[in-house]
Length: 175
Image 1 (cartoon, rainbow, N blue to C red):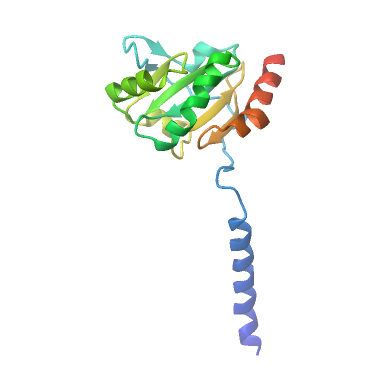
Image 2: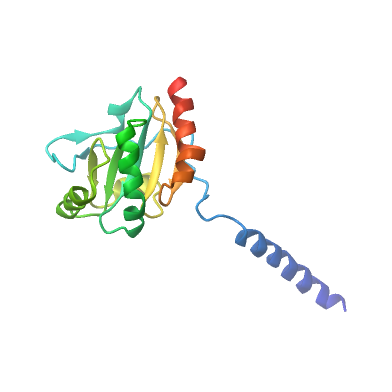
């Protein structure tokens, strides 16, 4: 009888961990970058490759960095919302075009509208790795000191904007 108790206890413990894991939201993966400085980079701008952009250029401003690609289906879902947000001029949105061809990215923005102040090209995905990108789209809210304050995994939605992102931006603007 005792020889069955240890395997039963182990099984029940594993079942409890599995049950707990299944109840978690996969979009709420904690990021080790939140409350840390945004990784530095200098990349060519998508529309003007001779010009460079770096997060250091944004010191003193609250801004969003949206990681996107023309081949990304979920990016198509969030894109109209980003275009609408950009028109409101609530927060500047900068794009990180991830593992994409420049011509495809430019054509995609031409067709769907360009919500970005500017986009940079991360054709090899190195900067995405530095930012811990799991997959596109991902969006980061970065404060005036260059600290990542929030990471949205997956498309930005009306709910994430109204419940989390815009209130955070308003709070950071006051600091």
